[in-house]
Image 1 (cartoon, rainbow, N blue to C red):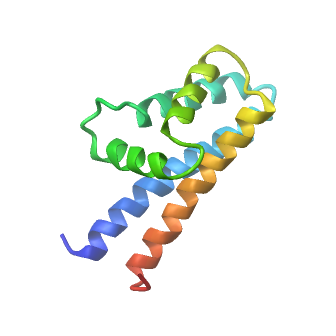
Image 2: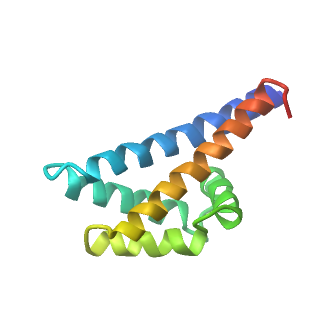
Amino acid sequence: MSDTGLYGSIYEQLRDTADRIDRSLVNLRNPTLADRARNELADLLVRITDTQSTDPEVRFLAVILKQEPPGLRAVAALATALRQRAPTKLELAQLEQLALSIDKECASTLARIRGRR
């Protein structure tokens, strides 16, 4: 696979994860969708913080989360909290930071595709 193909695949996976997080954040603010969004987001966060996973996408996201705020441990704690209750304002801010971190990596990957890095 060429570098462009590899980065394209990485970008697609990152963008999908970022979109799922963004959609969940929007739906958390809608009373009729909030519980479902909370559970879907918790499922996603549990998946991407699974340190035993052999899934390359999960491992790649774990590397990003170890380097970027809010951090892998904080994301795992968010998953646990979301399983139990609606997020607090601080947790929503951490979720927003998570979305920004993944968006930042998407932009970096896109720049690589375009030959700017």
